[in-house]
Image (tube, rainbow, N blue to C red; front, side, top):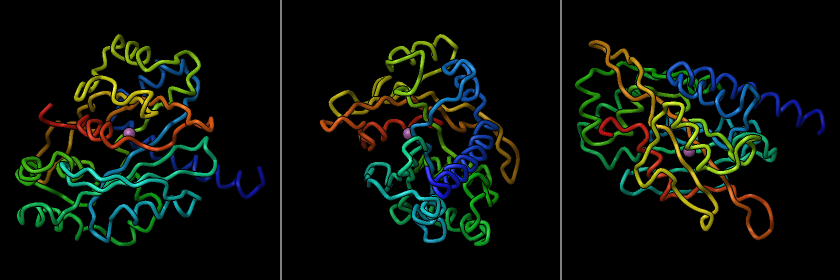
Length: 273
Ligand code: NI
């Protein structure tokens, strides 16, 4: 590698170290499973996922801008009509770096009441914070009441999750292809369950298959304390995902996502599980 690319590799790695630290604060099970699967060694992250709203101040392009500056490229687009989401994924030329999957909620497709709550949240974000890379591990920039959280929850689990947790990794994903001690998703799921962790069974424990070139599973989100404007509550935080990719005819591993599988992975943070 040239000095420029190795400097960029370090910048990206440093960013994901900060994102990981912020993520495990509310997702202690990810830290434990990481040790269970890696036996202390570093694991390769397949991807990290973000959630946001399609408001120009914080939309997926705005979040992605921090990654694009570090060499990431727009590499695939997805639509989740029932959840009212757009998504894109971003890849780095250095394939040892995690892919990033960013979705955004189509605010205009919700009731006026929900739109009002979301707009108020976004209005209280300082533009300067959005422009700083640390926005990707900054959490919430607003205060919502428990009643507002419930109003969002009634229309969108996704909107309610963002109102509680804001800008942080929604999940990290272990690349099963790069694990030393496990080669199948079945074996990974078995050890995770034996460790006492609960898997998301919506759409089956394993989403996807060799035909679509991607198999995925995930834990159900941990539960953590959120400080609402009128008190604390314990609600689903973030989860850990496992992905196994299969090679294309050319021999390289499939690097995209499968919308039907991702649709079910989103449900790993459901309150109504
Ligand atoms: Ni994912």
